[in-house]
Image (tube, rainbow, N blue to C red; front, side, top):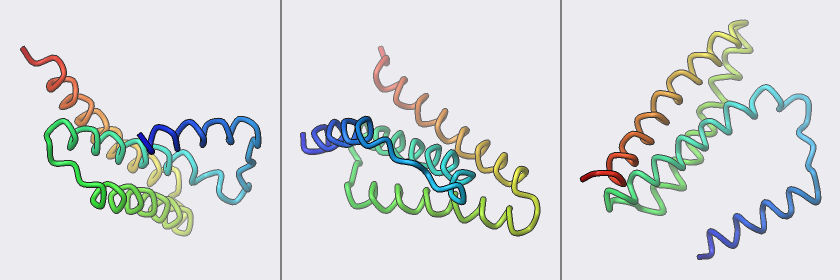
Amino acid sequence: MPAIIGLIVGVVVGIFIKPDVPVALQPYLPIMVVAAIDALLGSARAYFERSFSDRVFVISFLSNVVTAALLVFLGDQLGVGSQLTTAVIVVLGIRIFSNVSAIRRFIFRG
């Protein structure tokens, strides 16, 4: 229940404050959001499999976001930012679809 209240408060605050993302961080934001979605869906899958741990979720969430941002930063420094960004999106996309598939199987199993 506290998580749902926090989500609602965060959405309401975001609507009224309308935060601006600094220009320097804008290339990293989409990758970080995709990494966060991957962590959220992974935790939902773990919840349905009855192996959810809040500590593992927090560490997974933070490490996914930081790792994705660091990979994009490394790609920018090496001059291959768009290729590395695409690779990160593909890998995280595969993981997202895998987690959604597992959740769907759990929900709709006969």
